[in-house]
Amino acid sequence: MPMTITEKILAAHAGKEQVVPGELINARVDFVLGNDITAPVAIKEFEKIGVPDVFDRERVTLVPDHFTPNKDIKSAEQAMLVKQFSKKHNLANYFEVGRMGIEHCLLPEQGLVGPGDLVTGADSHTCTYGALGAFSTGVGSTDLAAAMALGETWLKVPESIKFEFAGVLKPWVGGKDLILYTIGDIGVDGALYQAMEFTGPAIENLSMDGRFTMCNMAIEAGGKNGIIAPDEITRTYVEGRCKRSYQFYQSDPDAKYDKVIHYDASRIEPQVAFPHLPENSRPVSEAGNVEIDQVVIGSCTNGRIEDLREAAKLLQGRKVHKNVRMVIFPGTQEIYLQALREGLIEIFVESGGAVSTPTCGPCLGGHMGILAKGERAVATTNRNFVGRMGHPESEVYLANPAVAAASAILGRIAGPGEVE
Image (tube, rainbow, N blue to C red):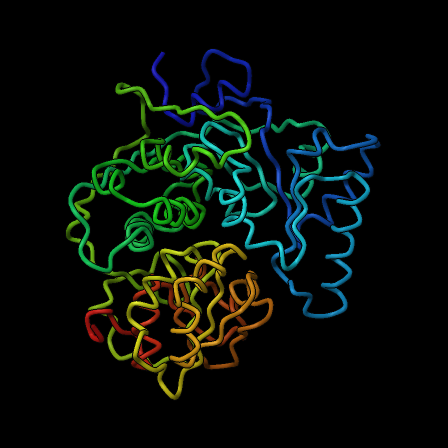
């Protein structure tokens, strides 16, 4: 029976020759993760189970990245609980501040997740790792507790939607624009509990950083997972990096999909998602005159080295507008160091930007970038819900790093072509 890449990975981990959409399965997990917000709940539930230890100390990771560096006493206590659990169970992959990163940038970088894996994490953007050809999905804290104890999870096999992107991308268009365009087309529930499989020539020529961005935001369309079949670009990334063996899966040519959606990627411009949903996307050329107060460049969506290079290319020799504050969050310490070696940090600081240690802080309205009532921000993050970045009467506009940089310079939403 022909199967999609998602179905093949799930079948392999359920010990079955085949699975079909709608089927309930128990599946072996290769890796599980939690952070300083979700792990404390999971830890309490884990202790109720009564098992003496986690299923595998090498395959459970805890990353304090949301309210860290600790913003207040409560967040410090959350982080301490995570640290104590990691010490108690001698977890091989606990990442303290200063040696950490934003989890969905950090884990691929460290070679902890790879092609063919089944990964669950108590964070909705765990779907990021589908860029490697893995089945990766977010779960609740109680499911995280069970996975930490048993090394298994249960789920319903999702239907798959295939998104085929033809053509060559315009300048300054990347993975962020492709996924915002897609969400704008199908809506925030357009792929509800479905696998979003991204294919076509434009995807085959997309960098790993761009692929991570696309799969990261599958959840913003309601997707169970996002996934891209691994190829030579994937192989180049994982060889010498992955700490475990991995397997490349491909969809069968005659695999069954709920639907197949075709896009001409050569016609897609840089996108901006207006408040208060990622589906409110439009070309930056149609944004109008929207003055802004803040620009955020970073997050698990666009905090990788390619993103920082893109922003720096426009900011070099220019200044951030006098009415705008710009904060930049490299995704990991290694990305921070690479940006430092390449002179990108100097460009950001000289332009008038503030560069932070890796943290999720402003993305979820946690800290280090909160918006006041009436303020507007352009952000390379993944969500722009009401109150997402601060006051419920503030506004967040989602865009790629080039649009964010151009907007920082001009003090309004702007396309990169306006400052080149």
